[in-house]
Length: 385
Image 1: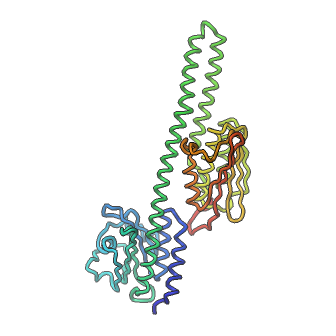
Image 2: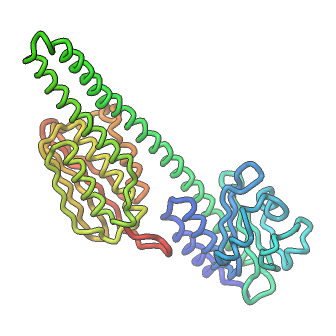
Image 3: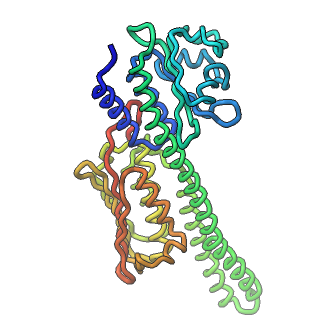
């Protein structure tokens, strides 16, 4: 007996909610196929995303052990029923998959399967993936109600997959922006300092015999410029080094970063923390990068005497606040973004976490940057920072 309409809608709604708050493509695909398999009591499930070249960019399975997956071998190509689901937007439901004209073969280690439900995932009139569900538990075949449920879930899945793809592209653009920013920093600060070192050395050599006092002054300037260049290079290298958040946690990683910046820039930077608050490693990485960017902006543009970083946990959220006593700026000035302070990428990172970035500043009055993100419940297999 099929499910009642209200029960069906509720089950699909709950499954859709479970996938709506995730933006990492591999994670969301795993969630989607797990929910689909549970929704219709399938023994096995798979979700394929085409790569546009006759293969799959992603092919996520559910219901198989790691040993089974490894024995089956590499990702399948688009053939047989796998291909049919990516060619025609209509679902396919079969009591015996082997009797379909498009069935071809399975790898030797592949489980033997019988009943089948295949549903394409369509987004804006394009097939962006497909559900493959087999062997309904406790029944010889999948029902009309099962097909209706997966078809409804496929509509939500299409939106979720597209959102995850857009997020990936945004992250790629953010990474390019960060690399470009580091290249500009190397050119603007380190390259200029090295050029000054060369000039000071040339002048010191010329004056060495005729005016040793002036030559010594230039050598002292040279030494100071070299120390400054070394500090700038250390700071940039530290920014490039990936943090070991899973091992040390967000609080300890930020503390070490603050100490390194304090030594490199010879400025007092305080750090106070309530601990890691149970934040996941993924969210911790995003918060770390936003905090790192805020500190970089303060050190490069604000000319502060003191900096402070405070990390607190309250009301189901994590808050990191970065305060400086520097020159400040007009937050309404459109030219601030034009000068590439990384504010856009910072806001995008926090938006992806369901959080927010708040900046309070006035010319001559310092700046306060607040980074807030909700503490998400940890998913199965997800690592805490």
